[in-house]
Image (cartoon, rainbow, N blue to C red; front, side, top):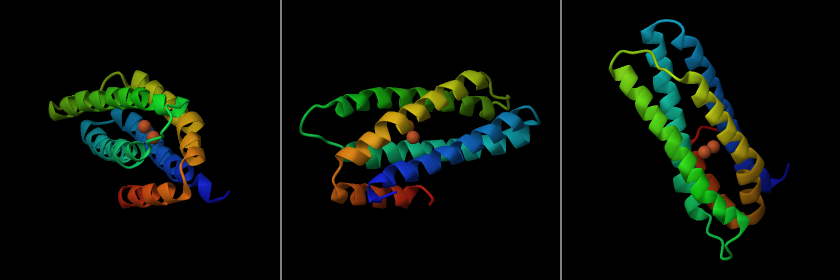
Length: 148
Ligand SMILES: [Fe+2]
Ligand SMILES: [Fe+2]
């Protein structure tokens, strides 16, 4: 792999980490409240950091002069992120009220679909269309937030 695959590689690594945390949350949600809450706190933190990274470090730097197919992806991605953040917020309310979280399966399906969309369409498109300078700039921002 060459340098131009870097955004893809970094972000896929983070996706895998988030998926593991989600698997763990699913397990713990079938156990006791305290383990579920701990698993939720970790999952929420990583997913929010990830979405923040995408929106503040990656998407804001992507500003093509021609309105290409890629440019039209951004509103769709933001919409999907808002759905996920909203769902997280509902789960946060459950946890505050000492309730186990609900609708686990639909969230998981949605998250996996979102992840696949980014890995198949968004990241490869970014790696292809950004200049090496722009990528270096984005990568350094990603590295400030996301663990390597
Ligand atoms: Fe995302
Ligand atoms: Fe992502």
